[in-house]
Amino acid sequence: MKLILLETAFLMTSFHIYAQELRRNSFGMSIGTGIPATLSFKGAGGPDGMTVEAGFNYYRQMTGKIKFETGLMWHRNKFEISNDSPPFTSYHYDVGLLYIPLLFRFTFAKYMFLQAGPLVDIDPRMNRTVKSQTGLGAGLGFGVEFPVLKKCVIQFSSYMNLHSLAILKKDGYYPNPLCDIGMIKIGVRTR
Image 1 (cartoon, helix red, strand yellow):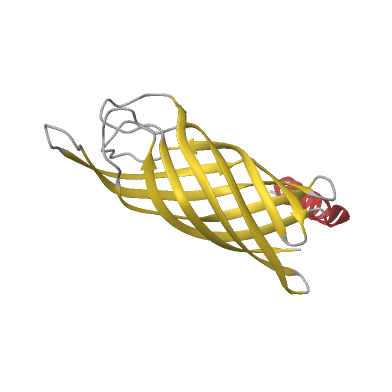
Image 2 (cartoon, one colour):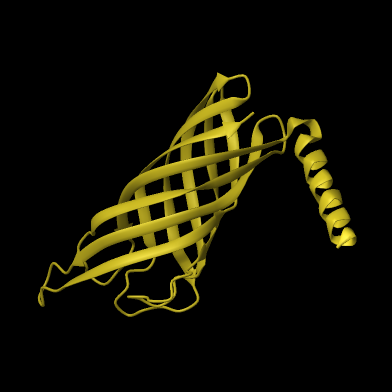
């Protein structure tokens, strides 16, 4: 038992020292919403629905203008897709997944940034209306962030995520890849 406590204390001390290294690390939380879309070529009309997501973020300062951003995001798309040509059918989807962004953020002007990189999608659902959506995606966006307190920054960003670009199992009716457009996110992070 003492060995486990000693190892835990050593591990936490290591993380604390690493987190303080040259003030390169910061942590945050964010929440966002947007419009679901698809890049399907099956003749389906545009989806009607909503996307929401929330999660925790970790930022690592790489250079003076470049940060690496990762974290764990919970993501949910609930939408309906209707076919615009006969037979006039519609499909209802409720897709929830976790994803890990692996983004690089480039600060190009004071308080303004661009970000891009891959996404790792993880589908933890047991009862699925579609097959597993575990796979790889991509993200692209831009935003602004403003210092609000001595150790806190608020950020607003607009971005687009493409989920399931490289998916493990495809479903004949599910529109792959799923695209989140017009995403607006607000977040708070440490400095």
